[in-house]
Length: 118
Length: 118
Length: 118
Length: 118
Image (cartoon, rainbow over all chains, first blue to last red; front, side):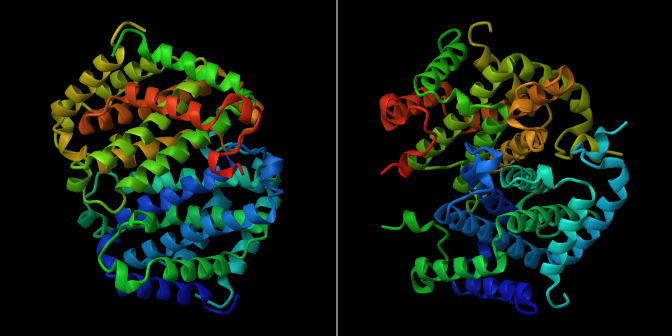
């Protein structure tokens, strides 16, 4: 991945929308729906597979999954642009929060959510 | 955003999971569910807002939305790592596909999907 | 709607699955994914429409939406059957909970969630 | 389930919304988002469980799942009311479509979608 590839991608997505006069449809509300719709399509690839099968996709299926994930990233970047949110910064902050909420020595091998611990 | 920040984030997410022995839960199937669950939480922030309201969030709400978007990026990166998918490359490929599927002069101001055109 | 039409539908869905030896795929986990996938398809019908447009669908679009909603009901009934849950009873219980949580005189015209009130 | 319990439930949900002046928020677009948000919450109960674990919930977890499913049914009924769609009729029509699309002798034990067959 070249430097600043995410910023570059976001800029090209904005240009793509502007060339088609599609910014009018890209309210944060609408973009959240489009993102969730794509997340639903991603689920459909995996819903009848075992966990093991989901980790051993053939090339055609893997590429279809990659393109669904691309759609999710695309709408996530469009939404971040519209709300002026720095996605990578937010993810770093969330990772710091999770490090405090789920200390390794406490939760090792246990997938419960923080509010499910005593 | 510093260079290679997405790769760096992905590496730290992997380390976070390993320190907690959580890789065992991170099958692609399970990660697609976690991602879609977070997409659902994102929807909940916007579901009763008008489109205009969704574009004018107060600071507290905007930060809550940023952290939901962070969760989505986090699971997207974990899934990409598990399936050995280059997310930014996939998004660039998808953007090229969309450029062919939706020529600007044909779809300007029209939000129908490609299969909804005559 | 004739009496017991929901029970009858659930029974025919179970027979449909058994005739195809599909019960093996119908774990609650998998059914929750299929249901969420259909909820994502429902979103896609509405994502670029205004709220007003979403209330004034033409006949073809309305029928497509009806069939997506049918898919959601189908997976909801399959899941209820697998977990031995009485859906209508659960909905009645949830309605009673909501009546307590959101007293009419307090929340009139206000769509915030219970945890968003002071 | 007593006769016409689904109609009765739908009527009480409408009354609940009217008493709170919440019909203004219940556009089909918004209700599709609320439904998908609840479908996301349902996923979260199952995302780190194995398929076997998802079929053997303890009583507390099962009740929490029942109440999420109730939320989905509630929004599905609200949406059907707003669009004047007969849900059970739509499900019966979809079941007939699926019977043609997936003949038992052809798809037995095979979870591929219709468009994935040769």
